[in-house]
Image (cartoon, rainbow, N blue to C red):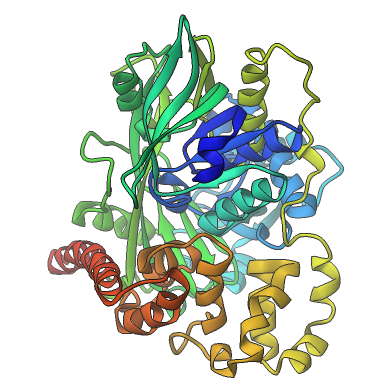
Length: 538
């Protein structure tokens, strides 16, 4: 906060989701002086509640959005191979067919185009045609009375909240001043230009003036209300679309691959997530509170009913151990168009000198969006600035990751932990593993699992607050780890243990510790009401 008040910045970024942190990294890597302010926590909105996929968007081919698909496939390859291989992993999907000839020709042409748009130099395999027998071997849970055969193709997946936070840390490494719990209250005008903003420290309630030659707003679903608050007229409107997901145990579905199902309105993904499955998503207009979108009992029923069209045994509502919902910020010029038909292209807007906003797009294309936003902001700096470096700039933890994966047995012996724990840590922190485990040299208890059956260890909880900017129990359980939806009781049995681990590092008194626990318990309570309602409607 002191740096925010005392530095003259080139660019101030408002918003700490994937686009905001991507902009901060792009600008900082060009040598610009950058600040970022986030009202809550990194990825606390849409960027922690996606389908966790890094993909080209197979269904966008039907909308003839070839440019978006090609762009997204290129970004997917970069992340898997160069930018973040420790966080972004290949994942296979089955596309089951329910008709033998016509559908196979149509879908096969789409698969071939999907692969061709990426080009021949690729990190992921080409698609394959599969017989009904081969489909049944890979995914015994698919109904053979419905499924006649299919395709297998590859995309990638990511822990979106961890990826977003790691990009923020990378931006900080290159000089960006990054703050959370800091709200942009108003823009500062000088004549007909924006020259910074008044920012409120939500801990101290202090308001400081941040000077910046250009301000970039990457506020997602908060774009329209912030435009109104700042007294500016936007060049576009943001439509909110809710995407809900459920989480079920690994034994609920027998398959060695993810599955994608075409529905009447969109597609449904059955996505492997460790020893569990994430199933979703919905795509419906949303006009309620932006603060904490919740999945409804109807959302849960829709997802289960769509999945059960091809699954045997069928998913049951009592198998659902977690739900989450996020809001897509879709750019719209037609208020009557259904959200499933809206383009996932992004828009950059400049309503006044010194101010740029960006909205729309897909998580997968965050880097391209960031580059476009910074390119526009540079026009307000009136000086030459280097071009974007992020196409070849690996995020922290990526360097040496592949070598460390080859050394798992030695690392397990060195740190006195199981090989499975080493692999878990490498796939979350990459080459930062030694830094994560450092406190455990003095306190071996930190090597123990936080919750039986999950891979997270105590050292990760401490690291979340010492190095990753977590400031609350919710930050730790919902975003630095994914215990909030991976654990059958959403981590409620671990809240005291987690609070005890982080309290000394955050300088908490007893009342602050209790308040943070209570905050998390209330969040889980609201989510559990949805689960109970969904199970009652069975």
